[in-house]
Image 1 (tube, rainbow, N blue to C red):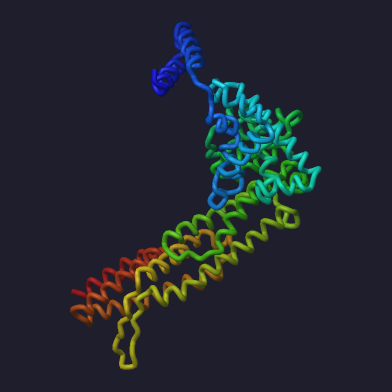
Image 2: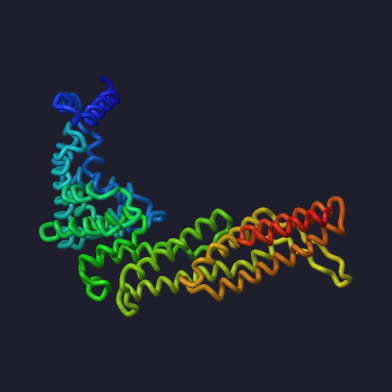
Length: 434
């Protein structure tokens, strides 16, 4: 049978294996046959052995640090190092193995790989030139990355057993789940402390609201603040939440140039605020403590970056808002219609301004937000008033240009969250044209 048909047959037999004794026997027979006809793993040995690292593979530019440890290139370098130097025999045996990825034998291969990496790291620590070579091969953060990889591989079976008991996605970290994670952690802590810590870090990666991980940290540490916890192994969990908060804060440095960029920028700002406020609402973060100092520094950085973005609005209005002006004689002088690029830029900044309203207090940007919101609204309303008069007093191409400018102004009011003023302006424009 073709491989895909065999896989479908095996899956169907597995789904019904508990229906009756005969169904169970059928599943056993098909499983044995599948094992007999399956070829060696070959190139699949690499993803099979390194599968514990997969949930933490990503792009560091787009994935928060708590959910990122390895790039695809890191995995290729690790496999190459194992295959050529550290564990040649293990790699060859893995390539020849005919067992499926779910078979326990792969845990043995992973354990060998983890131990080989650990031995290589310890050996390099004793010889400076070897450590230099390691850093050259894997980058300046290479040692930390390899330590993480070694831990995940060495304890892959214990971690897998624990994580299998938890949902893949946790929308609310309720008391029952908190208790379960606490039990899983404590069950591993004495003999497998590294595995116990990784259960917490991987659980955090499954939380829709990652800062809720402090609920189990408080239970394990038996404290509601960071006085002691931030000095224990549990500090790695708080450091991970802080790293994510810093990731979002740092990405606010570049002001958006388009509406799409502004939407992405606002998402970063929103994430920063909910992470930083979520952390303090779930756990006692002392201002003078290590976590507190980092957190308040990040808040200051984010507030400064957001204020700089908001302060771009007046200049963007100059080029993106079609503002007529009244001459000395009282006659209205129309403005040249702005380019789509200029409109797109001010639309983006006004979208960001409007989105920031809900976080004004939490992000300490109240003064800058109010100043720019009031200025933008005043200028748009004044431009709208003059454009309505232009529509009423002009005709032909001049009236069409005034109507186009009026619609642009209404668009900007819409995106700034003042759809009431935008709709009123449109109605006034129709009345003026009539």
